[in-house]
Length: 525
Ligand code: NAP
Ligand code: MG
Image (cartoon, rainbow, N blue to C red; front, top):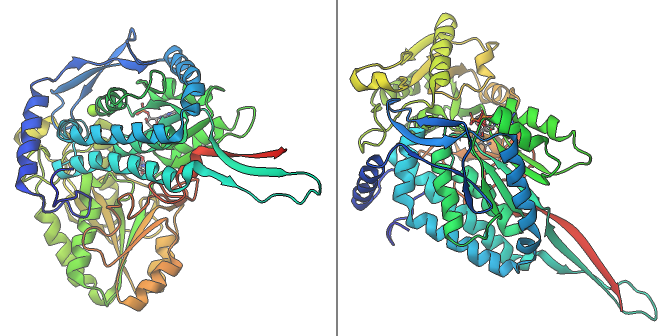
């Protein structure tokens, strides 16, 4: 995609070729010279404008108005669903080979726009440039994975046995078919992959789609929606609406015109949606990808350099706003002091600032509400534990115009404290000393979440870790990230317990099946 020798993933992004930086900067200049444009929703292939608008500001500097977006309401929800319904017969009857071909075109088009989309992402989410490019690169790979899945399974048409009816010839066939209109609601933190991935899978399967991005990230998703349209996905097959989750989003969830949902976001919103959606006439599929409270356990036998690097990358990458962020660390007492010293040292070296700059790794948190949460949580934690480093918002010079928070490590917080269990979604990680690995495992599993988890220790201990940890994505001895950095095709992504509903990870073997229902076709000839 970027060069023949370099494949960008979250595990390879630490040493990119120089050309990537040059291209990113050119795109950034271009995007910044075109800020503040108004963008419509896209319904039935046409731009649709609502009476009310909202401004999308950058968390890097809230004086930067990135885009003017539409504040859609129930009427827009309904017209998008109507368009998707009308487009379903023809899209679902399009041979799957043709859908696959079109979706591969979409993936290639997204790749060709990676620098523009990456710069947009960096400005809108506050992600650093490598994370931004990674999120965009992941979209194409997720879509291609769904296409490959369809192909490898020959469109999911399976000849079954012939029943032994004497005097008759019988054929039996299993066919997986799309459900109909699929709703995709995505979160702010990975607006690329977590919108484009589910949309791609739903479309390859033959469903038509309505997508609704988070209010913090409609601009990137609008540009992503354009990729689908520009690659030739027919009118009405993908629709894009923007507006508040509590009104527009709720109207979509409450509609009987929705046949399936992929929601990625917080546990609280996800559970509310799940309950409301269940109020329909019959049971319809809903895929929930929710929050995390991801632990890393470190044994006395660990390589502490790898552990320190992996933990810090996962604790603070994207300012701790990854569902997979490492928010809890349990360290065996023999190596506790040594590792904690390294963690503090690495944290103090992190460059904080405008994340579009090459040398900056840590950008702002997403919005004023998260900025307020950070201040509240560090105050609360400092009253019960020891803040080892960080603990303050950063207001030097230009940074006072954005939501910058120092990466924060806190030790000695009592295990009964609520913030050991609640997802903070901020650059705050709590650390505890454990007297043995069993204690670490008990604490690690003692939460309602089960998304990702990390471990550092000996080979035998690694087996024990995999056997006992309750999580959907698990890593051992990985300096590239203790709990973060999954990539489609390598680490399909999904959670257990309160972290996810389907038990089948996105970007993996079993994912596409979630978008299809089975029909058995028996014919007596
Ligand atoms: P969020 O606040 O739960 O919002 C997610 C989406 O739901 C947004 O588009 C939001 O729209 C919409 N929404 C809110 N209320 C709604 C309602 N009543 N009906 C329909 N839609 C509604 O999550 P976020 O802050 O954007 O994202 C962070 C969360 O996502 C974290 O908890 C993180 O762990 C989780 N996450 C999970 C995964 C995973 O794969 N498991 C991946 C990434 C993130 P508005 O923005 O307009 O409110
Ligand atoms: Mg914003």
